[in-house]
Image 1 (spheres, one colour):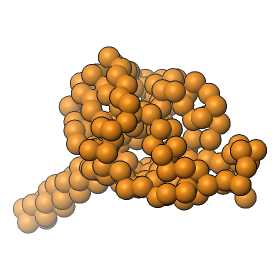
Image 2 (cartoon, rainbow, N blue to C red):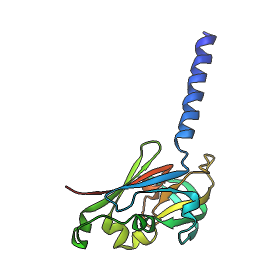
Image 3 (cartoon, rainbow, N blue to C red):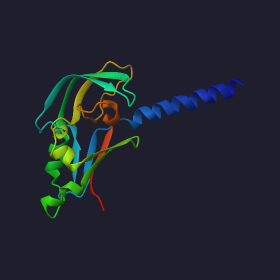
Image 4 (cartoon, rainbow, N blue to C red):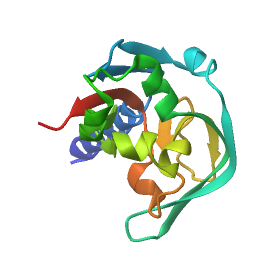
Length: 170
């Protein structure tokens, strides 16, 4: 009986450690329909123009407060994508493009080209280079994305960014 309890505790600890590691990211790739694929790390992000936000409340889909991010610093997602260059035969078809951002745990968020490059949301969608959280669950060392203009900010608060893929609707 005690052996089963010990085994269960060990399995739960292993799962917890695995999930904590699954959220870690130190670099990400920009790939898909781009002119130049990029492998981006924190050092490279420091070369982009930096933006700061004092604090941001993270709400879930029910608009319940989940946490507060403070001392936020980041770079625009659209600036990193623009550096890769979107491969299109003409500007007219850019409205058919979308961007999938994927986390280490498989979580994905999606933006349209127009949303990032033709609306105010794109002027605020940040790849976070640093932030503090009041939550007991710290996410230090992660590359994250957030769109402060979203109502339910947690829906597109992606932690552990591993890839940004530019695609085109068929």
